[in-house]
Image 1: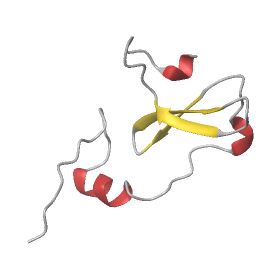
Image 2: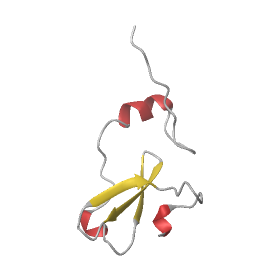
Image 3: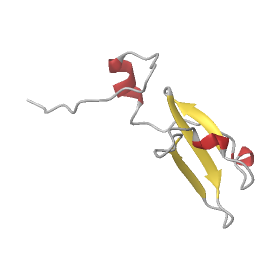
Length: 78
């Protein structure tokens, strides 16, 4: 018997739990590199999960959940 891990689906998820579990482990394109700039965070979605992508002044790219845990506001707002 294989142990299964409980999966927490994103809020307002449009996918069935089975479909989400099948798709979630894979890479999905969410933005063009030219759209990720140091000037403004880029908000996007992947499988109904909200993410923010930003480029640091050193040029590296960071992806995080689009939620400020202290204020409950989206990080994409800057």
